[in-house]
Amino acid sequence: MLEIGSLAHSAGQPEHHTNRSHGTPKGRIEAVSIGMDASSEGLMGGMRICLNQYSTQ
View 1 (cartoon, rainbow, N blue to C red):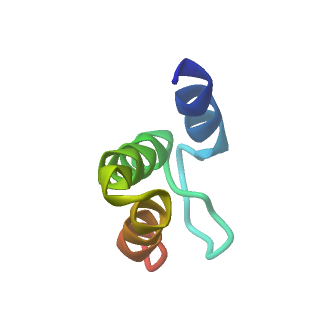
View 2 (view 1 turned 120 degrees about the horizontal axis):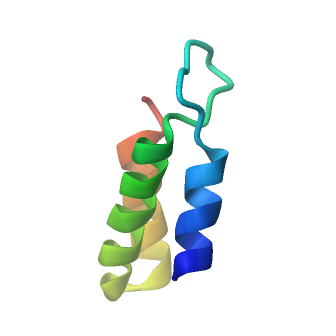
């Protein structure tokens, strides 16, 4: 779990002003957390929820 959190945090960018940004480190951690929480409904269900929540931000 720590490796997943570390990867999500490192993919974030403190300032994100472009469409190519991966979001802030905090936002990435939140996205991963939502996806993993939702995965109790099934792996793909969790991924869809995470993508739907953050794909437009």
